[in-house]
Image 1 (cartoon, one colour):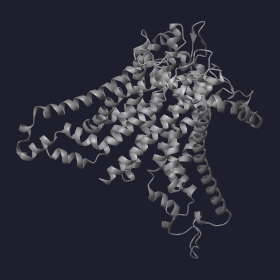
Image 2 (cartoon, chains in turn cyan, yellow):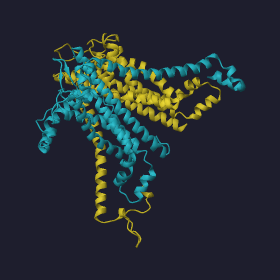
Image 3 (cartoon, one colour):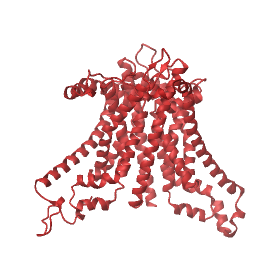
Length: 330
Length: 309
């Protein structure tokens, strides 16, 4: 470093001639090395997708695409289908997002608009730390603290108040869709909230002040200015949360009851794609069963890829657009 | 948000003759609007409080139930033989440290190199494509990563610490690369230009100017990635879970790990196993939160320094 700097200072006109071999090779080497790292990363992604589908191959050729909707899962007769797990994944993730989306948007609004300066940072940090809790610890908490609460308090209360709706019919149970939904809600809220917060911060101050100057209350300002402005980004944030909820295996498998079934009631035990893979892959015996579990993983992979690609495209576009008009804030 | 910039306070009388703007109309409608506003503000505040409360409840229960099961044996002994109580998770602590260390050795250099590539050398379109792909990789469910590594390294062979570390490295890679890219693009262009103008080659500029200036941010990214994978269970389930109960440092065999141990203990019906699971959870959560707080503090300092220069 000091050598080349003094060389440069001594003979500014003859830079290239005085550069050592190391300097000329160094540029090539570093650029080559970083290029290689990127290429390796891309290759890894391709290999991952290939390898998962490769393992699912036997099941894919035996059951075809009908596997996705078929409701049989019978290791004894070697008949497999993903229907029950697709259902469980869909219900648990959508229900979790149904709770998490409004909550997260409210949290993001609190953090950008309402919170006094002194508590803004600590609350932001605490909400983000919620995302850092390992899922296995959250699952443990789900088994030992949440499940009894769900069984003894929450589900009886839901049943007596709303029992006439099929969703809340049947007898309460500690393990099932409800605790899984609650755990997934806890896991997705911090993600959706922190992305939404970033999006809300890109709303130009002039627009917000303009609305207030017209006599809007703060809520009217949020409803008529901030939400329409931030809508695409918020949608992206929610889809990002959905991608996270779809793929969570450990915490869900610990509380959902691991039962391949479809019930109208949310009290009933169920299973998701990720959870079934986590609980059965290790003990699977026949090659077709192993392959079918890989098929479940492949469905999950496709869903997660779609959700993430869509979310990134939407969030990326809206922060670029908003960032540009808000003076390059990002 | 400043109310001072509002020219006409909503309550001020409008000049006679001027049509009353709809939004400024007083009376019961106005009261209703104010009430709705209050309700919405209350809801938002409540939502934030609820999130913080959930964090405190979870951490509180782990602390409450875990603390009593922690003793010296917990740290220095392996699991007790079947049917006996007592014992510890020393093998899992050692295993997790090894797995995370090996994963870091794999993922940190590659991730930082990718970050350098996308921030310094690649064309913008290539760089954004690579970053998009990394975001996608970040969204791959970790259980699928587990299946991938199982098919790649374990199927036909045996589980090993290497396979587990490789799975963890895949999860770390996008986190490290993304944070490296973001930190490197924050380095002021003037700093690089000054170096290049002195005739310093690009690679020396990157190694001696850019990377040292970005060190704080790079370490933050590394810490967050470590915190993330230290708590991962799903990718280890098929790659490094059938482990010895003895303390082992041999990565060619499966290594025990704290998250997998918690998962196993949680499925046991015995209360003493549950107590040990809580204790292990406490250790894990303490470690993960500590890393997170450390990373944030470091990042804050690095940003302040960069802003000052």
